[in-house]
Length: 117
Image 1 (cartoon, rainbow, N blue to C red):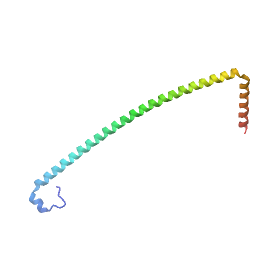
Image 2: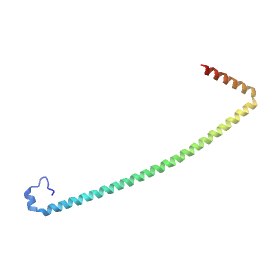
Image 3: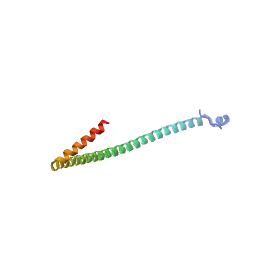
């Protein structure tokens, strides 16, 4: 039986027990409504979070595809540059064999001198 802070026992006697029951029923109804509202808000929040997560996942997948495409393009460019450099070195070796051997010997001597220290 719910009684208010400022209600007196005489007020309760005048109104009788019927009003207390209806207030309790009303309070129970308000509690049920609040519980339903909380459930609706929670469901809405979960749905909203799922929608945002789905959007973030789709964006991440799109960004990953772009990154993979970019990486494949960079790898292709690197292979092309490597092949071009290899052709240039072979051409230089055919045109200047003595200079190439001299440069290789100089690089070897410098590397040996650095490794001794």
